[in-house]
Length: 416
Image 1 (tube, rainbow, N blue to C red):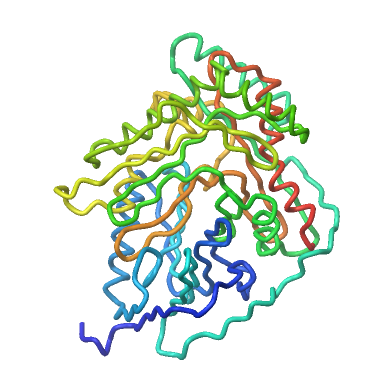
Image 2: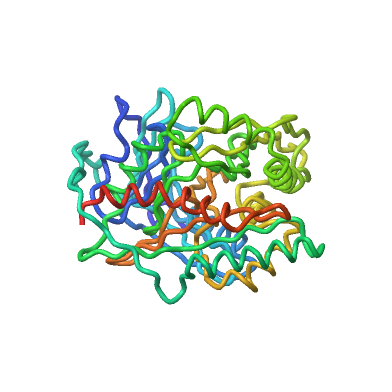
């Protein structure tokens, strides 16, 4: 193929830091933003869905095929510049994963802000005034749909899981539940993104193909041979009283039940990335991550990719990392089988990897937690808990209520 047949894609530096989430001009945005830094995009140049156990390899093959069609001019360089693929993978291989290449991407990292666009037209003009209402509050209502379980039924599922764990079938399983909210008009994810970013600035606020949320859990950051994964497992709700919350944080850090659950998740990540790394750093003890509504035990696992290996990209790591014990359980096959048997719903893209991957195979992907999928006038939100032998169904139910809180709050501020 000659250069004349290739599609131009251009990346240039912008002169100022921009409020990324205010730039989005339409109601089908793409976003991965934390503390004002990250990537946003709009317009669909190309999209693809993949399913099945080989979905990560098929996604890579499609992305690499698309890259062959571009002639790239990039005066900025670095991760997230040049062509960018936004991804939202399903939890289960049986459900659809979504890949999207936006027409326009704007990125910001430390002292750099840039814009990438596809096509031969002039650089797009950016409007920093939000093209959506942000401050009208209208009540929303939640309804159990045909897939949702009543709270008592869900607690019964937890009790079943606890008994199976005590019987020795597995050590941990993660069970989720859902709630569907409905409105009288089409739901726009942009004000939801702004609300989440404002209330939870240390999380990664995301939106891909109308799956929107704010995850505290970074599954994978790959940049120039360095790999990072933030593992969360072990949760306690906040009270809003600083002195009480400090005491609760201390109790969480000492909780044998939560420490055991956390260790399963950390071990699953370390074992998954070990074959690719010359060295791995796993801190001796987790730290307590404070969010607006809950606190988590957290560990940042890091590794250096071995230079002697053939090309290792984000897709390679994802194939091994997902699903981690933080969203599935351990041992992984037994936990996945139990979820399929008793959870009684399709997770879709909830708890799957979500984020972006660039032309070099670097990227940032989180676990799609604290989020929901928009379908026209409804949004289905999710929450889950790690179940171990010491789990109490009432406590686990309360934990899901706390994990629903970010999306519930964002929706209550939404303009419908």
